[in-house]
Image (cartoon, rainbow, N blue to C red; front, side, top):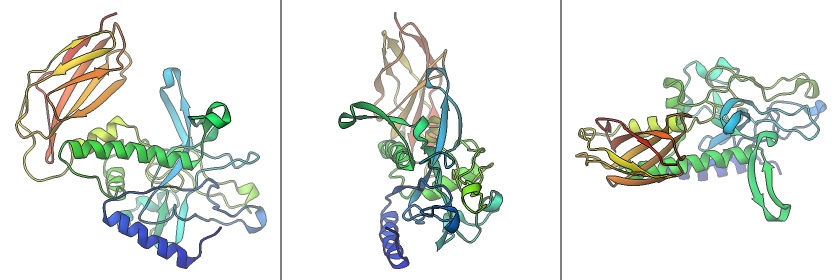
Length: 336
């Protein structure tokens, strides 16, 4: 059922209230590419869907995800299978109902890949959405594990990630994240590398849509993948390390010690004056795989590590003003 302007505006008031209360709503940008609900050559045009086009939600597009050995990330591109029977693509484009929100203030980047300098652009970010490279979900009624996709998968991936990040910021005294879009655009525009920029692909299929090609991915923002997908650690680390609050960062500290068993490690360190919490990284010296923990105590047990392997341990004290790293890195080797 298509929404009329009155319904879209009324819905917008609810999202505005949620944003004012510091609540972020993650919404699918749609699975019909640049054409929204319009299907077929005779009525093809560029469209975006509601509520993914609302200015006070975080709109999430879809990518195709390629993995290498041990499920290591290799490449992402815009999800687009419009040329396949029943195929979909990452929704995105320009809203005709909403003008440019403040967090998308014109700075040149919004039009680089065909976006608008006057109206709401979407999506804001992206995550894996291609059903052929999707996520595993256990469904008893469907006989067990199944692979699913669509931007209705992409949106909860980001929601789960930011929920964990919000839990971490509250734990270390930095408060709630609040409405996420202003931070996404600040990080995207001024901190290259915090998000995985999707630079290949498009969300259009011109030959079946009256020659209208849709939008193309490119460097920085684009209207099929937004600012890109999250690299996880890099984004979370920068976010927690640069809270922008008043006061002084935690004091210098040391005393990092630890013991390792086969698959667990016990760590402890001296307290840092002014710290509200600690950010702990345990890194596999061979693969670079990292385990991240956030805590308020000066000791922690870490599980899920690999037997007979060297690990490096780093700890940062955090508060509302910044961070301070422990005076030396600890190296451990797990038992066989």
